[in-house]
Image (cartoon, rainbow, N blue to C red; front, side):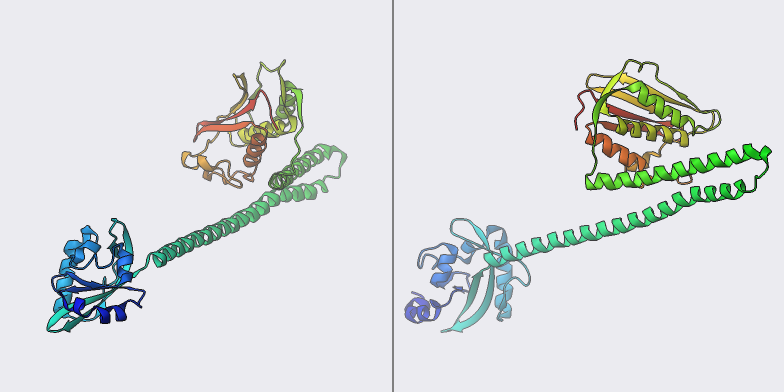
Length: 381
């Protein structure tokens, strides 16, 4: 019978009113006394732990290290917390592990040395801390994402303002120059020169109008204020109109090859959207191709789609930048010196996708590009 059994009334009186678990061990790491809080915490019946090795409430993987720590502690024989910053785990009778904190107090009684461990189950605190950490991580991520989006938005605004400034300044300068020169041609025989500058002014005004329409189209797409009209129309009529406009932009020796198999083709789609798409692709092909080059329009019928392709022999798109080609305001590095807003392809792709159509491309730098519009035979809106 150990000393704590002899004095059980005193021990019970002192320990049962404490919510933390109390475990007393001797120098052999044998449990000599416990309170009901400790027994309940570790899942044992009253006095069931008495005489057992301390290892029975410690996960097996910590047994070896625990013995070393215990021996070191007994040598120093000082009051302290267990773990020194390490996570501690207790082991219940049913094999379940749970996080604990433990304070150790060595003391001598009747010539024998004992250690009293004051054990606290910190499962709730641990869960709270983990939840709090997760919340902090989520909030941090949200804040980081928000800051990243704000940074991206600011960069976008900067690019936009620079773009607008450049794209408007160039045609406005041409208009101002033509108006200034126009006023100097007062003689009747100078009508040809007057006509030349009138045409330049018309062209630049049309260019400005196109830029404004692009910006307005972006706003309508973002606000959802886009109305489509799905009707049947002859493909040849649309292609004729688009090619006619594109011919006005051709460089010396450039030529647009017209598809020869569309005379009887009827398409059910939004005509304005398809005209916008084909016009944008043709204008890009002209703009990014050199003189004396050929631009082809091909038409094919597949199982589920009607296919329109615009093929050029232009500067192409660098492979590493192709993933950004449909991003708003993006300009490939080899196209920065060529006039453009970086809006057209973004708008066209969104409009086509709103109607169930698909816009894709393949391109090789200095070889050319092929842009493909796939129009579903059963158009949807």
